[in-house]
Length: 130
Image 1 (cartoon, one colour):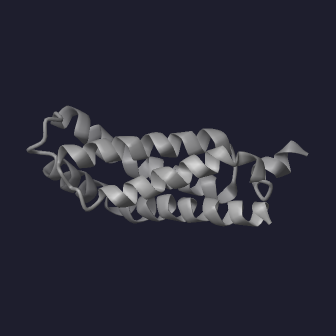
Image 2 (spheres, rainbow, N blue to C red):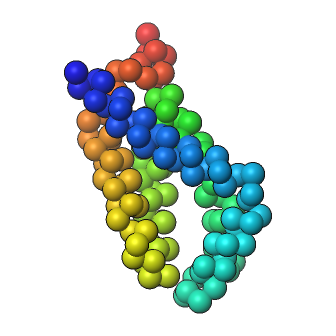
């Protein structure tokens, strides 16, 4: 039963990351312009925001696919958690308090996935162990 629950939670996180990346990749330039505009009055220099705005959708898409498939799970979960920390930091800098709870929920789900990684039995990680 724990393996099914773990799969369900992993898929929730995976679909969210995947969906965020999927919709942003085709409009990468517009997304980057929106993000740099959002951070224009923050203390972060544009020289940091611009590369992050291009890397974020790629990271989200990749993390999402890997979570859905359940491959390289421990490393992917940590990568997703780091992305969430960076997003939370940026969200605080621009005082977008409405976005913070969603980001915190994502981070907590990733912590739970990492904590109970032994239940990750329905995954490509397990398939490749054989």
